[in-house]
Length: 75
Image (cartoon, rainbow, N blue to C red; front, side):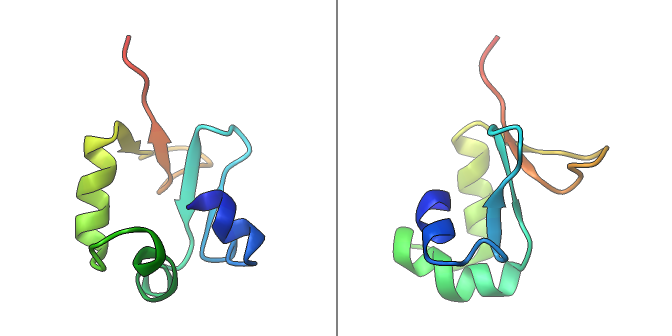
């Protein structure tokens, strides 16, 4: 989703962060309207967030990446 969105010029909506393990949604409304329908059955942001949690992503709460979603690998 992120690679294709970047190729389509939608990186102002959602993009990878420099660490390569996290991404940030810059425009929730546009994500729901333009990006989610291409890749997922749900078109609600809350459902997308729940799915991210199931996939092992967690929300960054502090620092420069605050608000991003980071993939947390198992220890």
